[in-house]
Length: 259
Image (cartoon, rainbow, N blue to C red; front, side, top):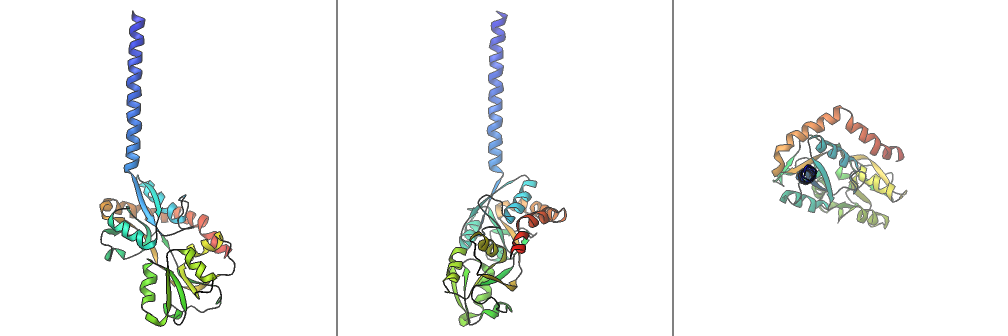
């Protein structure tokens, strides 16, 4: 009789324990899902990639991790990325130049930059071209990616003095350059160097000096405004504790050495 009761209560206790364990597992999964931040980006390697091992992926991912969130990135065309972030379809944008919140009013710029991103010219047939600011491309043709606001704003000032072809991505821009449809590509240094390396292109040169050297910032939709100060504080800490420097040396610095 005692054996039966013991067996019954052992089974009952086991069942209760299993149920509690199952609830804890489900709760942890729900908590994890609630803590995931989805940021979109128009950047490709080495700044961002599908496996989230790009420089911005690593910097921002680590920053979110330190405040209890998990980062997920999705790739979109530059203009669409801003629209989706502003509408709250995604939680924000991984990295953009400062000041965009003036136009995209639902976005909050995290007030601590994640990296410096040189805006440069790439050329195939004019490797010795002397870059002297945005005006130096007057009387030439170039490709820019639609939605890159710093490019659009500055080249628009030249009016019809420059021929501009807007593309959706780096592949389209570099194809135009390869086919001699444009004299230059205006693009970011890191993404351009990454593209050249990935596609084994050796006849295109990055021209110096850069057109501009803007810092890039994370933007979050206003629904996440409470975590903006925390994220800024952590990014600043990562600059002083050597975390970002180590990521730079591992991911971006080799591209300079190979250039």
